[in-house]
Image (tube, rainbow, N blue to C red; front, side, top):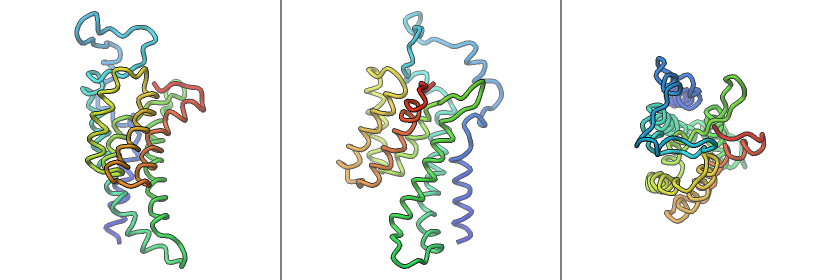
Length: 209
């Protein structure tokens, strides 16, 4: 049990470390001060354009770090929580499967919340897209996660912003998970994780940066 607990703590460190703490040097700050365009003048971002550009997102190292730590931390949560709950909960009549799922959901949703909220000059919401996609491989399975990853980036060319991206992904991943036999519970959990940032943005009347 001690090894499971240590593995869970390591996983939570990976999941709950804010993205802003992963800055190494001033690379990304300088990149924001001097944005690069790809493909000449036609690739300049127009005023009011808040859509996601795949060629920009895919070259950001911290996006892939988010995906990797979500995979690693999420694996620790999914593997150790069932064992720890079984050891700690001895109450008769308690559904361990529901308790395990609820505990996993709470830990993963806390991670998404931490990645979502930033306190810089003011409260800002940043969409943890790659982080959420990393969790999808664990929650709904590799096949659904992989298809969902490529499908949403293909559809992204017609999506206006990050909120629409995540809302569309949340709806699509439910369909994929059920169709591919990942289970309704996993599908609904993944929809909650992906749909949480857009819902928070709407409730606080702020856009996802």
